[in-house]
Image (cartoon, rainbow, N blue to C red; front, side):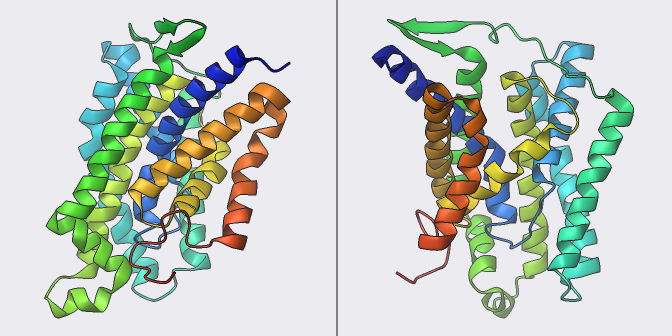
Length: 296
């Protein structure tokens, strides 16, 4: 039954969910959107980051968000190593299509198997003082479990947007998507830029993992459920556009929440794939267009 109370709460939760989706997708907007690397293992890296934060929280009592920030440099180094393997094995030889995709499928399954062996298949949760708090404004409730990740996601997304548009390295990342040959002409190695950019992409997984384990319990294979969402968001927003990714994440969060609230949760998983199909059919460049694409 429709009511303004349900509608108001659905809008609030949808916006908060959109911020969470932005955190999950922002790294993929770099690897897939700018570097043309179909990193289908991206959600698995997020879950790996979530388990790292879970260990820090359950063993040492460390706040999960702080743990995610602390381990971001380690994920950055892991990303540079994985790209080096990817570059030498596939990109350097021009075999980046199906073989590259298969490589990241393999990485995804390796992560899942490792987590299952170490943690089992039970759901795990973290503890933090703010998780059970909520703010109430009339009949609208704002749960801190989702509000805190929303704030962190906004900071991370806007920070990356500023970094990519205002710094030399950020502009170099965009130049890789636009014209790698021009980078070579000014004595910049595109492979080095892409290696560091892929490292940044994976560094976001550490923080996104911390937000994930705050929002909901985790188990090793849960990342598969979000493959459709993150790719749909990146394509919908415009490949390589951090601000477009944020807008698309907000739209997807709102639509999913509305459908779940008024029509039932069974319809929600179809939203991301439907959005992806519609965007590819009617506006392949996404909401803000692909970085470097000057076509109308």
